[in-house]
Image (tube, rainbow, N blue to C red; front, side, top):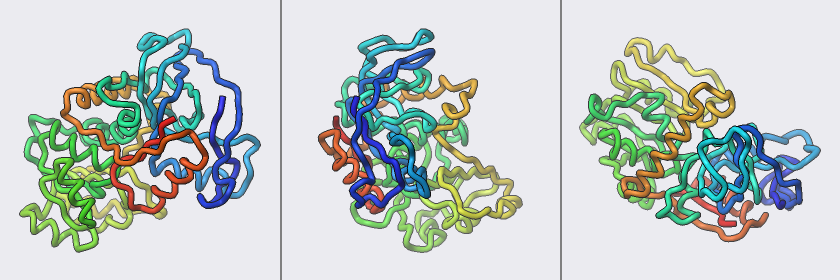
Length: 338
């Protein structure tokens, strides 16, 4: 099969930042599905891994990344019970295994969902990673109860990004929260409003003052999807007593949790790959979440967040995709159709 990968962590404009190569088609065992990939989308995790996985060395064989895809089940392992050959599925995969930048990929059935049939391949491929991350953030980490917590406020840092776009929708449509998102450009402000945000505030301004303009100077929940370290002092100031802060971003230095102590604030991390990396007892939860997201996309509760489609499984398209994401100007999701 054909795959696209890299042997060294190089700038995206380097001729060998991605290389195309032939490799053996894998065979499924256990809970694995062999997927013929139809399309995948590119996320910030892709370029971050590309920039760091082979920084000071050259790998013996190319590393294949990619963690968002839609495709068809071509073969199954001997323990598979959730899917059969011919099923159309979508998934975000496992960061410890070979990725979706390949014609075929092995994926555990327990982190795979049935693709929404009303959406085309590009639309479906845009959804798994961001959908899982946003859903787990709200309902598995913060444990928002749509009935008990209706009307509470959530501040979403980076509302126009891939995860933020889904989090706005889930927070509004499923969790019944008052949603405040951050954005700065006219097009990103409009996008957040399109996704359902009640308020959009400018992250280039003082967020404390910006929140006061919404008549919500403090919020019950904060979802950081962009820069935990950069917003840490503001987060401590605007989170309500007994509130909950969640982040998907890392900090290059330790942060002072003591600033949350007097308010008895809860802090949580969200990493969508945790369940698959550690083979947790509740790993099949991702199968359930993806099926729920599929249903929500089918009935129109959720909008797909596809904004850019590149056609062709080529090195050039992956380079273009990474360059776009590295620019920091991406709205919604970018998908490569095979």
